[in-house]
Length: 444
Image 1 (cartoon, one colour):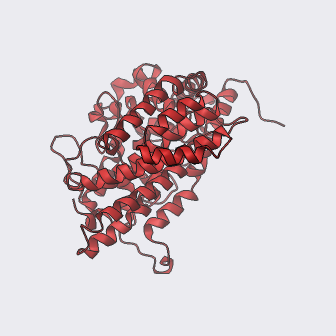
Image 2 (cartoon, rainbow, N blue to C red):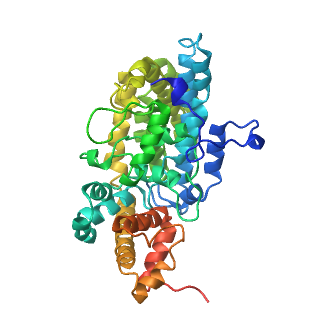
Image 3 (cartoon, rainbow, N blue to C red):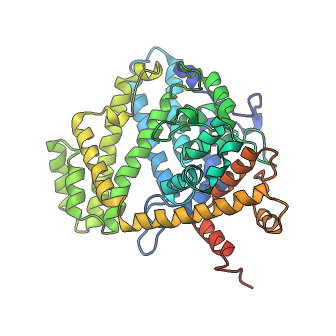
């Protein structure tokens, strides 16, 4: 793979279209970013759970604030990488120009990386997949192909994001959001089909989007890996999007847990201080000594840790660039950072699993979300399979027209239901659940 081909401003679904009147100070990649900011799916992220319940008296992160922070970190990380590679490509202006665009591409991809996630955090993904593998949806297995079934029992927000951005929903334009090929490729963390999902259930495109990803890979020269089923090397910028996401959720979840008094200040301080070498640690201690508010102390530590992680990941990317371009690099950037950073990150991860992701507040969201999503899937899938029933007609009349609930195929009908449910906010899903159960009625 080569940078000059990997960085392309050609738009999916609008490959031969160029609007001369729209060219100005914004690059096409910046236009991707702006298009996402002004989109309805992006706005809906403000009412989707990140980890903790949506805010009461204390404001914690939701999917929207998380995505904005990931975009900020991703842009910085890409700039750091470009700076480190500048000397290597000093005699190659075309590659330098391509790398200069990486910050805008990564920022846009970071904004979009969670667009396909259903309500109620990662538990929402699990609720959808287990509805088919363990719940009422299991009865549908004989009516679907192996590939379609694998898509359902491994439902993945990352694959759903690619569908959301590229699928031509009813009444919408060809190419979906008509994003640039490079931005789309930078979102796909797991560039293979669901039949290769393995134990973790990760994959990058549904059966319905296999041809879409093949077109993206062919356009950008992304290496296809050996094997009968579609599987590709990652676009190099995926590593930066992934690292920015991992940095933000790990560090910010700890800060949120401190604000919610799930973690004590000393627990946070000891984990965060472990990221720094002794001289840097002395400076941080001197700054913290000037602060009285524990939340401000944690905020300063958090910003320092993010900076340290960005530099470490940029160093790792630059050191392994050849392997990344050749598709030989394995794992994530954070798997290959220097031992001090790796060990400190690992301690934060263990703390998160021990005290955050098993906290009562988090588990309560998972339990409630699982029940709500399971119920909605039961009702909606029954309705699309039996549209002639009176209740079905009433329920389907409330589904947005862009979702093809009258698809001629069963898989198409199921996908329309999943498109609708995964687009819901936590609040909308809860409200619909209550209405369908007769627990609330519209105000008159």
